[in-house]
Image 1 (tube, rainbow, N blue to C red):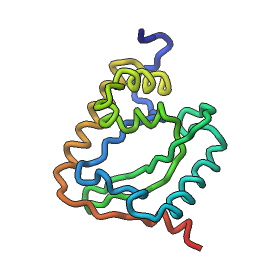
Image 2 (tube, rainbow, N blue to C red):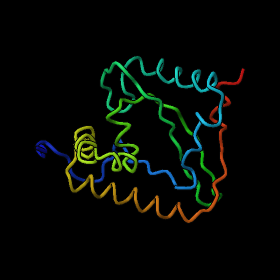
Image 3 (spheres, rainbow, N blue to C red):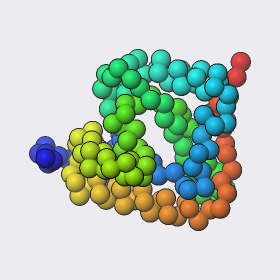
Image 4 (cartoon, rainbow, N blue to C red):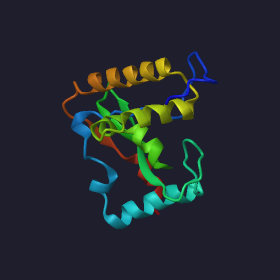
Amino acid sequence: MRDFTNIKMGNEKFKLKFELVPDSCWYSNLRSILSKKEWDYIRHDAYDRANGKCMICNRKVSRLEAHEVWQYDEKTCTQILVDVVAVCNSCHQVIHIGRTSLTGNMERAEDWYMKVNNCSYAKMKEELGKATADHQRRNKVSEWKLDLSFLERYIK
């Protein structure tokens, strides 16, 4: 049962966000671009920075997952890697809500979003609607350029 007590209203900046990747960018991630050794180095750097806690909800967990944070410059049609963070599975399920909906875990992810962001069901649905609108607009771009300049920090 959902608990809607102690909720915030208004235009907060939420720490947990829905990130709907444009369809043409699916499967173009660091794991598919880099060697296993390179990817392991980058994801372990994120795990080390996290110190055993999810970098979004701050919960101590036994297993973290690496998540690539992307921004989209729609004027230049560029997908920009801005960070790789360590997150718990619950936050990762929310971030990738499109994939999560296919696995039947939508309600659990929605509940986690509201808990982490301390927001109402209506506000969560509003934010999901905004993310969906961004996704639909970004899907009009047939091909995104890739900006991986974030990775320069790992080049010695």
